[in-house]
Length: 121
Image (cartoon, rainbow, N blue to C red; front, side, top):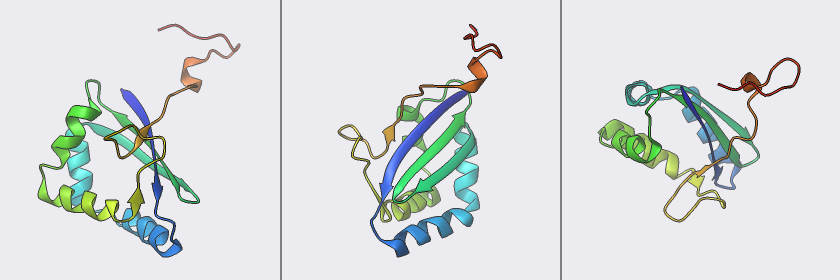
């Protein structure tokens, strides 16, 4: 399993933020199926103000640079992505050519022993 933290901004408009929430309460089944086919096993999205944080777990071997572009080969997924981008803005921390900024993992409770010692795997 691999895990990722990604962030971006939603547009600064309460109505748009609510539309974003609503779209994700009613995510399109074809989009969910396509994510699973690509190797995404878990995805959670958190929101505070306009800042969106996505936590994602994938199968080993998943490569965001290779596998995310493949998702857009599906017309329905591409339609979803285009719709979401009308509600979003690039994260200020995103590198040139990126939409989301990939976040650095700095702590994982599962990698800590009960005594506070780091476990080695």
